[in-house]
Length: 333
Image (spheres, rainbow, N blue to C red):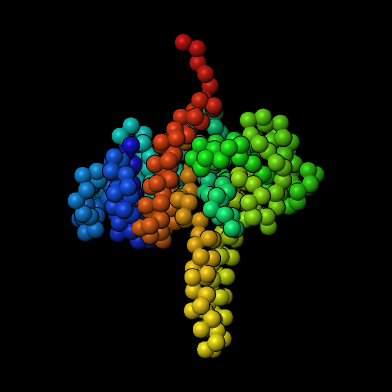
């Protein structure tokens, strides 16, 4: 296995990226890690590892670059070279913590989508309260506007991922809506409900509401990219604000509150970890010819290592090959 890594992408690059790769390289000594970026900066954090190679480039894509323009103009950027390595068969997957839009563009324009999949979806595994299983949510913003047929494909893509990568047999697929009744929703969701109900390759359980998704009501939750991105950011914001509110309440409650906080320290830490979806890995642009995986820009070494374990599972399970078998039209010899 060979993983192309954009070592210069993210708020804490290259340090967090390199340190995360070093952690993962100990668990996966047979994986070849290709670090694309400025060699002098990368080597500051490197130790000798025979399965890590550095491909030098001075150019990188910044967080404020316009995605498609950056991909087309910055031909020697670390992210572009990593994606090109996948296209050329020199690597099996690409990983970045950099500009999300640029990585989506690199995936679509360089790596390429699987024939038969109209709109690859951005998928992330989210936490379920009281469980380590989680659920898959897509699309998270790869496509702002969708047709019912696209959402049906997301259901199939999500089901494939949940079964092959996360090991869930017959995953339950739910359609995000403003009510569980079949008649609820917009024209998009009503038509999607009808089509998903007829899709025999998945276990469709009907509409699910946003308030229930963190309780494990479904293993896969499907929605359009605009809504999915809004839900993701709402979950992130709520989690951050709850932690902030707890800290403020403790600091404002005097000595008794601070003593209580010390007693509850482990419980509060567990709460934070339970709501942290980074423990499941990065977001996958699913439906491409190879794994293209994105982690949060502020990610640390542990999250980088977790994402690499996720990519290893994707490659080992051959989930992309299974998608090709299902979607690409068969040709007669």
